[in-house]
Image (cartoon, rainbow, N blue to C red; front, side, top):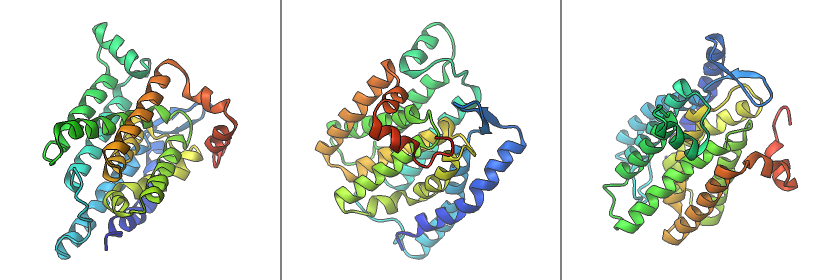
Amino acid sequence: MQSLPLVVSITIALAVVPTALRELERRGLVKENYRGAMVAFPAGLAAVAASLIALGPAAIADHASDGDVWPAIGAPVGIVGMALYVLGVAVLGLIDDLIGAGDERGWRGHARATAAGGFSPGLLKAAGGAGLALFVLAGSALDTGDYLLAAAVLVLATNFFNLLDLRPGRSLKAFALLGAALMIGSMDLDPLWALGLFVGPLLVLMPFDLRERGMLGDTGSNVAGAVAGLWLILTLDTTGQLIALAVIGTATIYGEFRSISRLIDRTPGLRHLDSLGRSHA
């Protein structure tokens, strides 16, 4: 029963994602990618739409089964909080996709734009994401230190997957690998079932992203990062979250001053993994 949200969301996404991408193209909602190809944008909207549609059947099943659909995992955030965080950062990403100029890169660029008197959707996204993370975790039984740690993991993970989304499929492949590593390392499927509503559409969207049928945009990469961050805090204890925060923080700082794409391109194993499945590798 607990696998139902994942199964339902995958089923709905299989119908919604290709239709939504065709509709984006038909309406001229496209963007030039790194190769100069024009692809549907923001494709992340398709994953969000599939999750929202799947929410109805999953909620009905949960009500009919007296709450047996979503696992009681004693998490610091419940399913309502998870949905609020994922959908909230998706909206913030969509704002950036729609009105962001794309000239400011990284937190430093957004801060400079704001200091110069401009409006930076990226800074709005960062501040709004932090507010959402603090809000959805506020009702938990965590002490202050663990509460702030979990919020930091959520915010940095959301931002980092946004930084990764510079090549087709990169962000979603990293998401899939992280999820697999967390499941294998913990031998626990409950976090997958808890997040299945959002995991399914992201997995369905991945081949379309790889084949350059659509570009995730901040909408999609924010969702991937949000679900990854939630998966981390649902699976890891305090020590594990500290390690995750250190790794993600270090990678984020590197991305502020250096090119992650260049690092991947000059590292043989990473380069092969990054290009795997890409239609124009």
